[in-house]
Image (cartoon, rainbow, N blue to C red; front, side, top):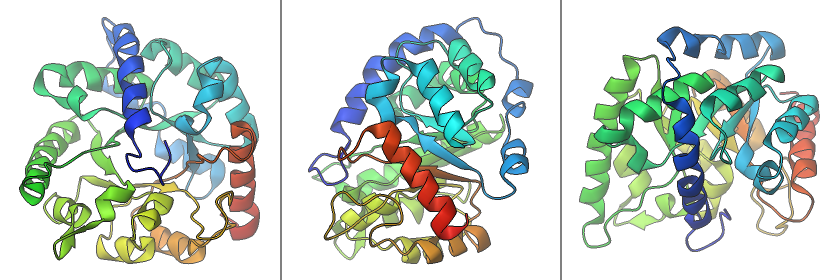
Length: 299
């Protein structure tokens, strides 16, 4: 998924659709209890890092992961990541993925979950799958409003997310929405992003993506200030007007201010690196990004 494309999430939506149906089979009959979701916690990850823990969106390395998910997760752990966020499971069951995580000391710090899988007839199975992974953060990666009635369609999404947040809260989980460039495009005197987050309750996670936001004309710093406490998980992605190959810390994002706001008012529990440039091999890209994060910003 390229933040710069006209339809940035088309490949991710298709990817999620093809992997979720197979993976979902593995959760049926798992008997996962609410206590299982507590066995891999933010606190445990924070205890290891001493700071806001850093995860990576596995979509960044999907071409490698689809061939060898277990080996990919092992490599991610060796780089020093504390957790991973999924956008598909490559045909593996929730139980099998959980074992891979446990074998490598990784936490599931989120899943990108299709909105359709949160419909009432699918919700229980979707949450059970996430519980098996030990995941608390269920993030919808893409929504598209109705071009004929854009504002009202986003208000309807907000209403549904408020309902979902109450349902998930009872199970120790949170619902959220992830930013793409189109969310920050002008919508009259506002944006679909502002319509949505101005009308959702504080428990709906605002998963800002710094690179996607800037691609769409948004300002990550201003967004973090406008919605304090909502950036529970945040995607760290570089943006550069002049260097399309720039990795984290090498472009135009005001990282020092972003990290300051995350630590002081953002309510941030996880930094999640997402790297989608094809300039270098994907595993190398996420390793350099993590190294830059630690060395340039002492984060």
